[in-house]
Image (cartoon, rainbow, N blue to C red; front, side, top):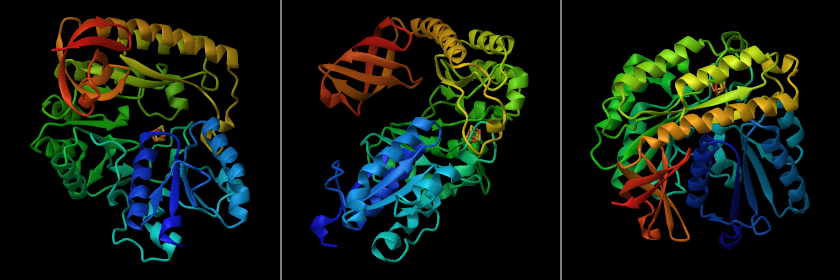
Length: 420
Ligand code: SF4
């Protein structure tokens, strides 16, 4: 293919892990001389990074793939699918894509696309990335999951958990800091079960905390069953480690947690948060909750609402249960009505707004360090180390910089401030 016609488009759906995979795919293609385009008509290679968490995300892939068929059949387009795809979807989508590859096979793209030899690294997590942002970088530390939560498709789509070698993570982070990156987000389906040689997750964070420079380290996602006191003690040291914890609760009822195969109790979750709040100054906590899991009674739902109230989250990502084919929970009767799921979600949302507002008001009058990550119509947006969103009047040139802002107003999910 002529150099001038080598244009690719990436369609990325889902979580930050898919975004990180896409950044690695982009680097491979740029190194092969391909140019990125946003136009589907212009592209002669489209790589879709799919998400199977919600049916709507996979439906979008079906819809897009149908639109590409005419150009694909005429030989003007090659379409490749990767990311999280369930076996049943793989069978159907196999007819609409030229190839379906797993995330682990991304390093074989040069051979697949251009019959060039495979990249030297066999671990796709170690591939260099072309980061979308110039100040925030996603760094994958593991891929896959061994937990088999009964509602989740990830262990089937991404396979068993594999940890990336620690030296490669530390070197990548050192290089990012040297390039001026201000925020490093470590990614994995369950970062706190990370284990590579003598490095577990607390040891890896300790090593990253020794890197000189002005930057923050965050991580996604943690599992309560693997959350250790050792990790809390490391986070309490601060410096580059931020006082923000995203810890998925999913339910506050022990019988539902058992049916979800989460392998912790509501009491255990509460104990982690109490210990973490004791040791980590100004800690903010966010979570994920599923409402209307099969068989969830009104009383079991109330246990979740009570725990939410007791913990007082800053943020919660609330999901109405929907069955994913192939998972253990898909065998259970999805017997909570749509209306009741909506009601439960609204109830938790109301609780969340109250606890988040009470937490946000503690910032009033304080001066906070922010990393500015957005700008619109004379307003800058940034996040505190504790991941609170702050809006203030400022210039676009501040995007990507650390600034100090005095907090003058507080809503549940957004603070307002003035440049200090
Ligand atoms: S920990 Fe559970 S919810 Fe998270 S990816 Fe693994 S199986 Fe899915």
